[in-house]
Length: 183
Image (cartoon, rainbow, N blue to C red; front, side, top):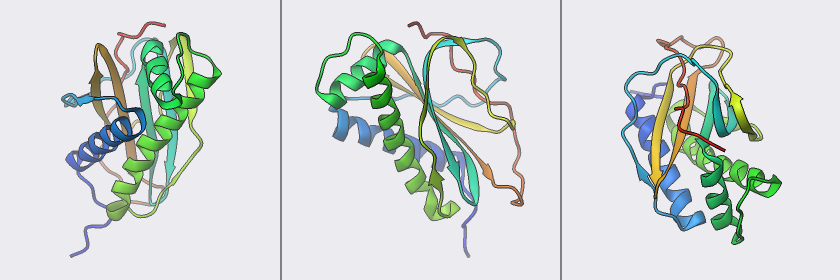
């Protein structure tokens, strides 16, 4: 029996964890530990601050992949990726975080394609600042995995649904990025 076109939340979580751990160990030389994904999410309620990178996914299933962290952690990741020291978020840090997100979500996409069919990735969009909100045009289920690296927390999120014309899945509100971020 062909299970193409079906995927469980646990499979998405596994893809996020293994992809993120691989990028951190091979590309950044940093140890990261996955936390417990939240069971339910609530609709976006209030603005947040920090850094969010978004990448669109398109194919038989479409949606968005996202990485969210503080500006401080973005500088740490960029410093490790580029073998340079960054104290403040600048263009190089934003580019580096876009590339890190591209690697993580690209690996997630590759892991899920066996079951969901071939998907493409958009160019990453990086948002950095204070008091902003992100949301999907459609209310979808987000799979969110928190990660810890030292004292910092990062969230890797994926929102996927059958593309237009595909069978609809049960939907729930998106994930609001926790209010722990400061610039």
